[in-house]
Image (cartoon, rainbow, N blue to C red):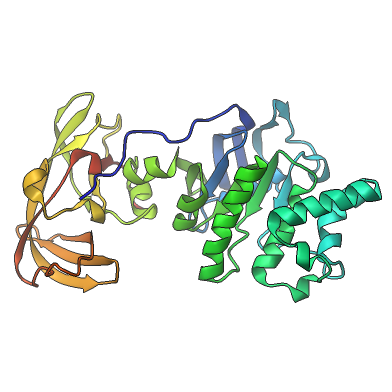
Length: 372
């Protein structure tokens, strides 16, 4: 089985375009956003990811100017903009409902921002043509929003946001109303447009696969605070908390963990199901220490792996390209999940049989804290 590449960051940050320092939002006596810091780098696609109630949309609204912060600074290109009104902030927002003018055509919607600025007719038409070309709506420029599909409306809203050439676009779950197939298509489209234009995107979503597909970096939020920031690869393979390990993809959680040996490049931990080696040093705060193992980390080639343990096969499910095997640890009865690539030539393990599986130190992580 091919080993995952967990060698380190795959995104090199440029200079911060947007810097948030100590930003907090309070509703009455409730802290919707606890004071936090966040840098958004010039030219990156940064996603704010979290479950409902995590504060991600509130944070975006505070940046956009729709929600006054109760504390902190919002700096854009080195200038504090926390007190600037919405219409003077140097970026645009794409909303979940797109907010298109129903009485205007696609061309009129896209060109609205330039028209209110008094742009000359020729320059306005040229810029609208360019924007429509980028989003692939040249042939639909005379249609009204009611005559467009959801994806076409989304692209119209994006073109309208881009036409004034902002350095930053805020996107508040703009794909939430689309069906699954169109959503996947639009994910690829948004990423390609961001790469082509070089505009910085700050994107909000609750969908983990969406965040993985499009983002250079992901900011995971929980209960009004930032839980972890990193590239999709870093968050997936090196989660720092149980919450990130569970929310950012499925994980087998083994607890409690006791550190038996640690050095700069490896930590040995004792658990109820065995003693295992984990890549890297232990976390500074070891309260609630647990071991997180992704289901696809397990392999039946246990003899070639550093870590191994024996299970009883509880159930086997064929789900197309993958086979999901539910495993029961014989001594503790704890349940584990293993995902393997389906092999038409291989016979799946039988329910009730014993199976030894293995995983390597780079394929697991030490995490802390509570899951929820």
